[in-house]
Length: 67
Image 1: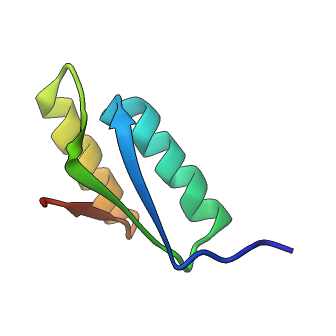
Image 2: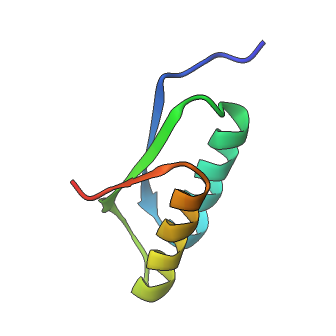
């Protein structure tokens, strides 16, 4: 039986590879949880690709916080 989490927060490097892939895994494991990343707590060597990754995250019904 899966354990349910109210929310799952992510941070780390690299936003467009590691962070996004782990967020997708968390969403598959716990689809009812609030899953989010604070954009100030992650980074990438390519800011354009990072913004595209944030768009994908949002389109997968997860959140990107600006705080």
